[in-house]
Image (cartoon, rainbow, N blue to C red):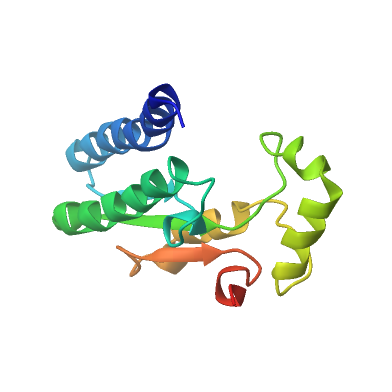
Length: 151
């Protein structure tokens, strides 16, 4: 892996998340009333190792940790901070990769619900809503059962 790949992945995934979270938290802390919900997108890749994930997985693990630390630092302002850890979700970013039918079939077969994710909007809406008003510092795995089936 090139140093450029490492740097770019870190800059986009971790640094970008930090800058957005920091700006939103500053606003949430100074508004009246204080508070809000910060939700970052991590990945189950932050929980596992992978030969092709040496640049991606560590940044996603760091995002999960960032949100845990933000929950501790920002709770006194009424700000909740959580992470969503998706599994394989069919997106524009990975559509070329998933054209490899063997790879796609492998991923589908590893997922307990027998399909790839389509979106993660529902869990994001839940964490942003008052239904989750006592939820902070948590990591919500949204992967169709992929993570627990890694045996």
